[in-house]
Image (cartoon, rainbow, N blue to C red; front, side, top):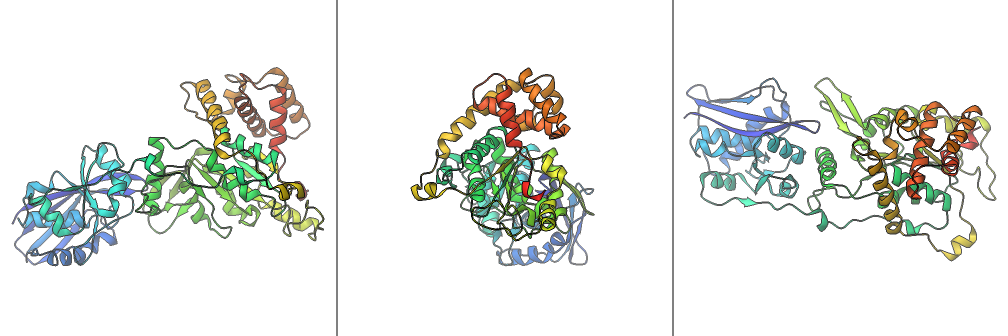
Length: 509
């Protein structure tokens, strides 16, 4: 008996750290001791590993076994250490060649019967392993497609520990996993063509897609707010290869990937219920916080239907990620940062009963009830929403004719052209959409025409725009100019941006 080692990966949020599992088997009191800051799941691996080895046709030696997880200063979490620990033990027992485990990174949980089971977060684990120079990995069968997405990774899969051991002995060739091409996964989602009428809200959705702006749709129930919001992802550009890895990594850590579709290739759409807690929205949980809806909507759309029904405290947790594009969650065990660059779409009824502003319906809410209802969306939150548009009920003629507007494909072409114009204008700057441009750059590097400036100054003088509101209007004006193929926004674009900026819920006054 001797010393052997194997490699695996531990995660903190979406950041992975390569871990060396060193095992020493020596004479002494039989038992397995784990050191190196393991969590409860890893400590419990002692019993899982022992049973899995026995049920895979190998013998567990009656000796003193010490396993060290290095680097010892990093906390280790999860059941993904099982396979590496089992193989390192068997290498130390000389059941398999000690050198066989050195070239592999082993990421999987073991069942008591020796089956190799998937774990959450395989994609960011593989990314970390490849970044550390370890390109050969072995994972569970259902994780193969996800792991093989990483460029440069050589991913093998196995169904049970006996198969893993035969591969490490050289008795059989590894079963290599094939990455699924994004082109092989058909995009899905509702089409904007399904929406009847609603010319101004449709324009607002197009502007939101072209410039990356946040959007508030308010109006009577049944007017089409949810229909419009659900179709916004169909207008967004497809994710780039790098963005696919970013988004898929977050969904992998959250355990939200399906085995038959182990990657996210279209902008995601998240629509939490209004009873969702702050932890569900921004992330949380015991120990290391898991990603919430804002991170699952990274590079996509976060839709809050019936927004005033959410707790005001919950809604205000969105303010920081809306500005920074990420969310930092501090817990006792660790502080993790998840990406959260999403487009927020809020939908609100005019009042609690939903009848204000409708046609032929009398509102039964008191002015105080309306104010309390609308006040759940705080001023600082609404000030961060570039587009605030009323959605009026469709006319009887529009309902009877049932003719929708342009399909998503046609609108998406204009959105892509507008984004390309913005990309060329920004050059080497880190911004990719108009919504990301900082205020100073809007007033110096990318100013609007002087006629447009006069419109902004008039709105400020009337008290209709705050300092942040000016920046928001200018960003929307640039998006309108990009959609129109103009070199610079003028008075017409700025005026239209002011109209689309709106003023929150008018019935709350």
